[in-house]
Length: 167
Image (cartoon, rainbow, N blue to C red):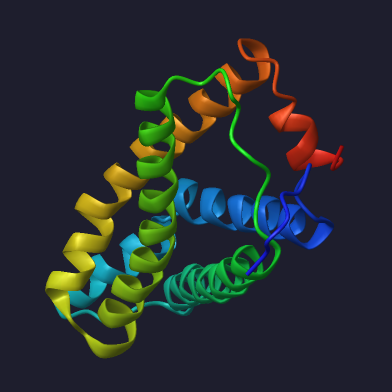
C-alpha cells in the first residue's frame, strides 16, 4: 500500500483509466452485434457470421475491460491516489466514494455477467447485464463526469489535468 500521498495519477493509472473508459464506452454505445446475436439465439436461429463476429468483438472488449480493471485495482492499491479536495463538503466526499466504489463494482460486474450469459448460457445474467447493470453504469458514469467537472471548475482542483497529463 502507498503510504505517502501523491500529487497526481501515475502514467500507468492514467492509461488504464482512459483506455478502460474508451473500451467501456465502445461496448455501451455499440452493443448491437451482441443484441442481434442474442435475438437470433432466442428465436432458435443460427447466428450469421457477421452477427457472431460482432458478438465476439463485444465479448472480447468486455474481457479486456475486466483484465484492465484487475490491473487498475492492483495498481491503485500499490500506488494510491491523490488526496481529495479539502474544500469538498463531507457529504460530497461520501457521494464521490460511493460513485467510485460503484464504478469499480460495475466495471467488474458487467464483464462477469456478460461472460456468464455469452459463454455459459446463463440467461438471467444476460438480462441483468443488458437491462439493469447497463442503466446503472450509465448513471454512475454521469455522476463521475459531473463530479470531475465540479472538481475542475468549482473547486479548481486540476483533477482533469492530474488525470490527463499528470501534473
